[in-house]
Image 1: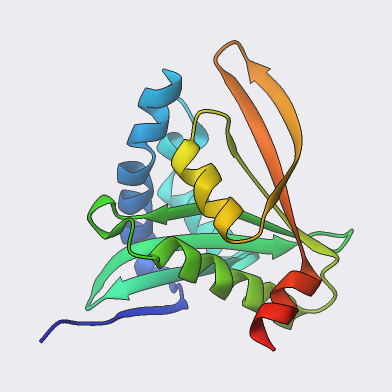
Image 2: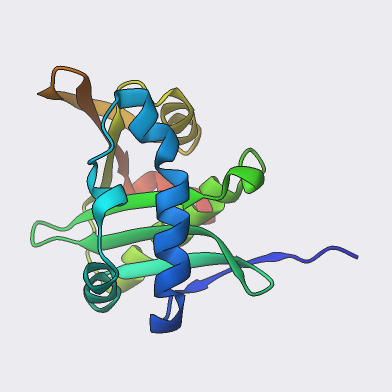
Length: 166
């Protein structure tokens, strides 16, 4: 009998597993862009612990193992900002990324007034772009960050989230 993946709020005790998963999950991104100094690979455990207190951080657990995570917050303009979506490589392509996105959107909506959701990814991250498109995100901008990297900003209306849950 297999175990189910459970999505829940991250705790302080999850910090080390989240950081290890983040490091594993962003290896491909670093290789894709030729940049091993990206923030997800250089973040410290103390910095992550601070984020746990300042943002909504969710984890997906398979038994005691953290196999996915996502972070979000609502900014002063009511934008639900979502970031650091990571799914363990062996768990990818099974819908877990979409489940984590749905969960963080719901969490941010429960916090209060959200005008819309926003996230970003690199222009070469085609798997991420496909996932976000399937989840209803639409490209709203491109920002050149360096010679090898452009960030694509994607947004999703709150109405589309509410309609999907109705």
